[in-house]
Length: 232
Ligand code: APR
Image (tube, rainbow, N blue to C red; front, top):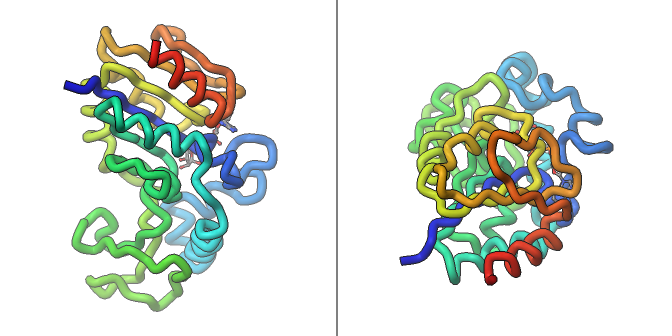
């Protein structure tokens, strides 16, 4: 019986692949007003602007590759029963070979209905170079929108994610500033026997109520160190 290992990853996981984080210096939220391009209010106020913002981010995906950190996360499946819970909307964990991934904040490569965004029957997978345009229709006839969880919207996948964390023998947090809830609150679901590790070159908001082994390194170097620690 393999031990259960859960990863909770954020934008820092994809930083070494060349995808901007949100809150580091030079991050996305320095260039774009977050409430204008990543909130349900912003979408309803100017759907064309928001659709274009995600078209640009989606177009970047074929130009970047998973990094060593993604590959080492995927490799853990050889020795552990792994669940990757990610806040990232890129497809780099998939492309690195991870097979059980929970996307808390949606996926760039998918689109859905503006009326029933969380109805699974409305979710479609886009082609790698496919943009969404004003006038494109979802199956229910409403405007097709990015399958992204925006600020102000529910996070339907938080339940399965919390369940996975509550059953984990090991929890590894990589590349998230732990600023955004409910994702950041997942750490509180860890059970008393769970060993918790955090990999981040600049750890922030680390809950001191929990005993966390912090590895102050980037995702790739940190995952190499973690792999050795777990092999001991
Ligand atoms: N390796 C690992 N971590 C890194 C690296 C790296 N090479 N470079 C930066 N980091 C860390 C930063 O130190 C920071 O703690 O990654 C984290 C990035 O934090 P954010 O930019 O806030 O990204 P994230 O925590 O994923 O944001 C959460 O906020 O904007 C919303 O929905 C969006 O999913 C996102 C959520």
